[in-house]
Length: 170
Picture 1 (spheres, one colour):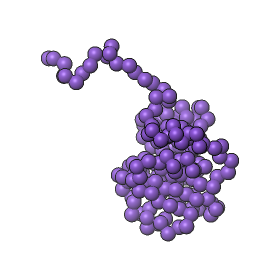
Picture 2 (tube, one colour):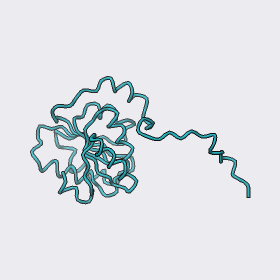
Picture 3 (cartoon, rainbow, N blue to C red):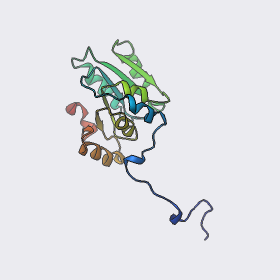
Picture 4 (cartoon, rainbow, N blue to C red):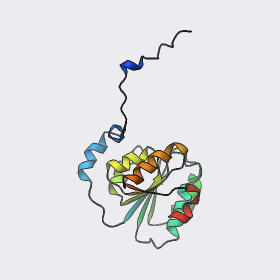
């Protein structure tokens, strides 16, 4: 058997590991100059990735609505493949302090203007870190656990260890 044509000799490849090589949109570098230390929580960003199979978005919004956060504005981002969009729109679109965003091309401006994020511990974590946004992260897939532990260890995020018990941890 011969090697497929697309296979390359690994000696010709350069492997780049670590947070300094995270793939981010070009505008994140430009926006880093505008980052300010957040002293008060006035705006929360909620995003659990493009799919959110276990509907952590709804659970988080229910918890936030049952607390005394009337003066806090909440940006909710729903991914293109989020299956409970109609439920979110029905329950939260008429609430004054909640704005729902659907399948937006970039979260960079929302991240820059938020004071706290609540979300999954996936690729979006690097975007939040790049713009200095404190976060409560919940690994919602096995491949997010190592990153979540690392971000908690370096104290840029607070880790909720078991997303299924989110109600007890927020």
